Length: 149
DNA sequence: GCCAACGTTGGC
DNA sequence: GCCAACGTTGGC
Image (cartoon, rainbow, N blue to C red; front, top):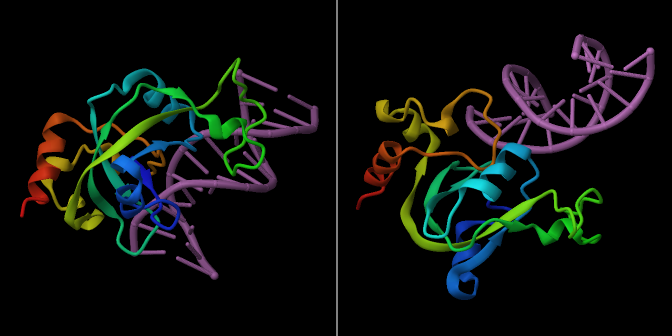
């Protein structure tokens, strides 16, 4: 799951009560479908820092809710407001996430690209712009091994 | 349904 | 700041 650290970083999540926050503001239908239909409490996800000095994987989160309507879309004052989404017919979804672990260092995009085992990683495919992306079990293990102390 | 124009993402 | 790639919009 991607976030620009200038907007919301892994340290921001670490400071939240219970290290938990709602992952909202996703405004892409493919990503929405993953939040709404596929993610389950207990699933894990990497926290990826994008559009910053050192793009890469910063740590691990746990999903702690099912997909739920993104209430930011109902708030006229929110940057994520969407008049096309209503409580009766929500268009956008969020999940609650809890920080599990912040890596001692960011596993950089360059480093990810250098791994043969990650050749198929969705994040690395050309033109990818999704803010929520799948990771296979083998890819997960590979990235975790890069974060080993 | 097609497609050009435009906006956004995100690495560099 | 640049640019490639993609999504969305809207005219037809």
